[in-house]
Image (cartoon, rainbow, N blue to C red):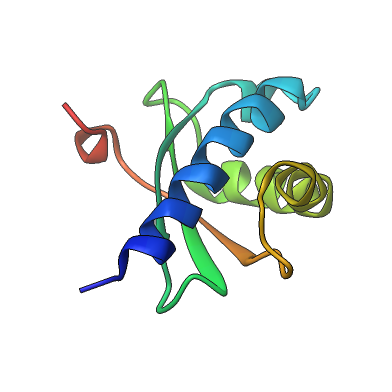
Length: 101
């Protein structure tokens, strides 16, 4: 079980990434939905799950494109998150059925 502070940080990262991903100028990244941000295994490293909005998006290509923008995404998170150290962002591409209902 994760502590309240870790979950709070994950929520801040989620909110920051929501805006940061919208600013990325990449047609593949534009088709990804932010599904979750969870500690991996602690809040010093968080797992960011993105889900393609369409079935015809190759998950490997999507992950490659997100990783190409990882540094700028982390910088955006750093400007929004109230932490001395910004967590490492680990990206994964999930499936549509992983989206919260």
